[in-house]
Image (cartoon, rainbow, N blue to C red; front, side, top):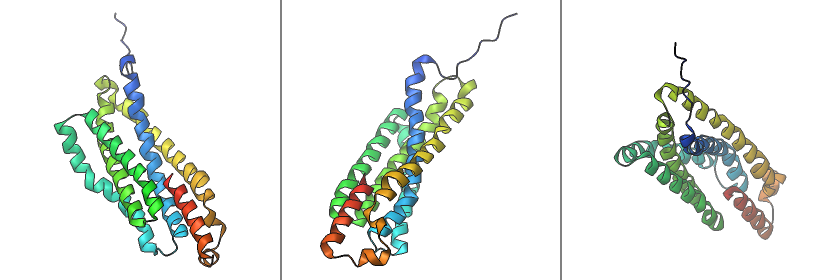
Length: 203
């Protein structure tokens, strides 16, 4: 009687691409949980924004998914998973880079555009990553492989919350003032704090 051959979850030759793709699950988990703190951060740093204007952070974020999900699927079908991953990372990096000129110009709409570009990249990554993980190995272990990769998404979400609280919210100089005290600051002092805090948000 032959012993059952144990099928590896991921073969050694596919281990590296599996690790890279799995890290993307954590990447968009981080991005998702940085969004909500950004609403309050912008509202604090830019008190001239209304609640509706501040909430456009979330609109820009999720509209990127809505806008790019179908084009991403069509692109991947025409080209390849690899091309989808590369384009997604390029869009993500481009959106992140655009935060710097947005901070220098102190232009809120520029921040929203940057965030939208980031989520267009995330739409490509999410559309590509799930089927790609399934294809990296035997079909019998595909579900377990996907479950393992998806387990890193909440880890990324937790990391996003920690980053937002420790490295963004707590580092804002404007958070040391009440809304009234912040608005009452002199022009040069207010501008200095504003520039500092927008630079922190852009990081």
